Amino acid sequence: MILKTLSLVNYKNFESQNFEFDNKINCFVGFNGVGKTNILDAIYHLSFGKSYFNPVATQNINHNADFFVVDGVFDKLERTEKIIVSLKRGQKKIIKRNGKAYDKFSDHIGFIPLVIISPADRDLIIEGSDTRRKFIDSVISQSNKAYLNNLINYNKVLAQRNALLKYFALNNTFNQQTLEVYDDQLHTYGLEIFKTRHEFLKVFIPIFKDRYEAISNNNENVNLSYKSDLYDTDLKTLLAQRVSKDKALQYTSVGIHKDDLSFEIETHPIKKFGSQGQQKSFLIALKLAQFDFVKQQSGVTPLLLLDDIFDKLDEQRVAQIISLVDNENFGQLFISDTHADRTENVIKQIHQSYKIFKL
Image 1: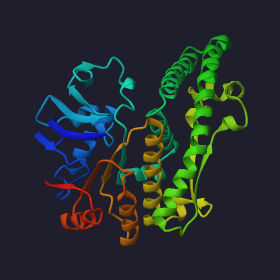
Image 2: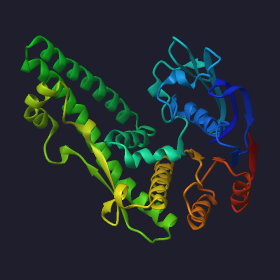
Image 3: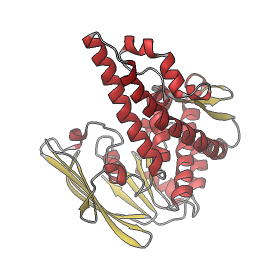
């Protein structure tokens, strides 16, 4: 799959900008603040219908405008696909494929497979479990519609159960039977989500370890492990056991929305015991494993976005990463960097066609 052209109107710092891309490697170089990352984020928008960096949709509109439009033309499986994402202040976002708007944004997820590697990924290590769950969910959802639907339904029921718990507290009342209606639904959706995550990680972890081994030159042992209360007890039992606590807290304190991933190096948490270079290598391996998994499941080579990839990595690790992408397993790459010379020197080692956009 190839992104042929990109058009931006009132998107972040760009009032109007058009790009025609090389089929292999595209580099955006320039000083900090000129919009290199914003271009990558626009491409991400075309895949996921949202920003990778800013959850507040209206903040992606240029300060001097009332709307933004991101327009991309792709070659996918020998067909031309035109994707447009647009947002006007005070209105709902619109995603169109070949001129037709989606009724549900979730129908678009996975259509444009994409993986981004960015300094913002460090949140996966330093932030709470919610960030790591979103990572798992994002990887699985790109190729598993049933999982995405179960996740959407689970979160809807969870919000309804939490609203009911607040209602009970505000009105000094309680109805066990009403609560159990939501418990049954959470149990049904939660079990499917748990099983899918468990099976996914059995496939994903070996891919991740292989990727880390290649980046680190086989110098360190790393691991991922899945933490979930559902390994010990079914969700319906857990909800029944926690009902008093949930009433006091006014929200649901147990379930697959509390699952986590543990990141380890030499059997210790990488957050505390990993150097900056080791943590960055860990995250890159994680994302390259995501690339491999999505490609394997979808049969389409994802776009790969590398945002400021060379920061905080020694030359040996950079060389390892470049050697990994110097083969036909990778499709189209988009790279941002502050150093034009460094970027070009690295890219020349790959022996592929490329374009450099100086911003």
